[in-house]
Amino acid sequence: MDDRTRLLHSLSIDRSTPAAAPRRRTPWPILTGGLVAGLAAAAAVWLLVPRDSSAPPPATGVAATAPAPATTSGQAPASAPTAAPAARPRSGLSASGYVVARRKATVAAEITGKVTEVLVEEGMVVEQGQVVARIYSKLVETDLALSRSRSTAAEAAVNAITADLAEAERIFTRTESLSQKNFASEADLTRTRARVHVLRAQLAQAQAQLATARLETQRWSEVLEQHSVKAPFAGVVVDRSAQAGEMVSPMSAGGSFTRTGICTIVDMASIEIEVDVNEAFIGRVQKGGAVRATLDAYPDWTIPAYVIAIVPTANREKATVKVRIGLREKDPRVLPDMAVKVIFVENETAAAPSPASASSLPTPAPADSGSPAANATAAR
Image 1: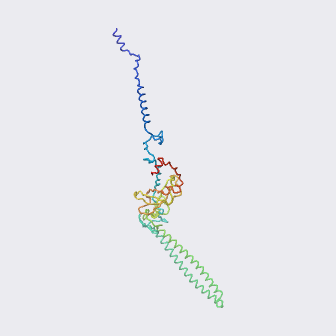
Image 2 (image 1 turned 60 degrees about the horizontal axis):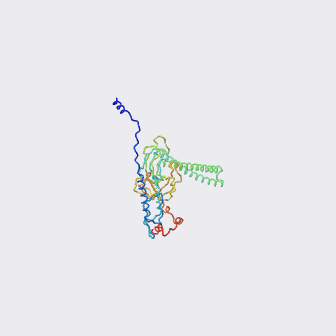
């Protein structure tokens, strides 16, 4: 029984709280003594180090990056305080755009017809009035020849009536003279007078017919000229649109196969640059200002240019203003529709203050001759 009792007691859980372990006491006297000793050492060092009474007290709340060098009266400090750095010059305003030609035309025929011959190719130089294409004109040539024949016939009729009228006037004059001497009757005089009036009327009609025939001839001549397409100005052909055998028309023909142009001619002497400048910086662009242009095709080539004009309107969608830029030197490497970047060269004299404005700036007060700032100014 005793053994069982001890066994049961060994299996039971002891729920009594164990005694708390004693806490380790902090050595406060030792820490307090060390702190007092450190403060005493710092105070002794502060009392023993000599101090310059003229030096300004250090600013509180700002960490010093380096100790200030000691100075003596009459000597300039090693690093005197310098003035505020000058403002850096503004870099030139940059923009991008394209090379354009002020004179560029797509040459088209004034009439509808079939192209019989195209006399130009891309890259060909043409002169003003040079024929670039011809349109079928056989019928017009026939009508012109017919009108010329009519004009010739009308002119011959005028000449014949003029001769008859001259003869009739001589007969009338002689009959009138004979009538006064009673050698001709009154009927003869009336008949000759009427003949003169009739011939004069016929002459006027023939002259009108001659004028009509000549106008018709001139009209058909101009129509025939329209069958020869000519260059409106001197330039270079950059595009050939029509071929021999195609139909051309001055008006759009919808979905048919009728062409509206023969070729496109560009006047290379009118080459310039157009760029879009943000309207927030358009005030930095001046008419006639210098510009440096660089083509994307030749990035190492800087082209001197100048501002021709600022187009007096803004693009509402892009918030930009178009600026026209002219090239000071023409070069065959500059072609229409090339991409280009420009930099507007700022006027350096305008950026620097003028003598008048400099004199109006406030003058700093003179510093004490014995102060480090005055010594540094004298040293500079």
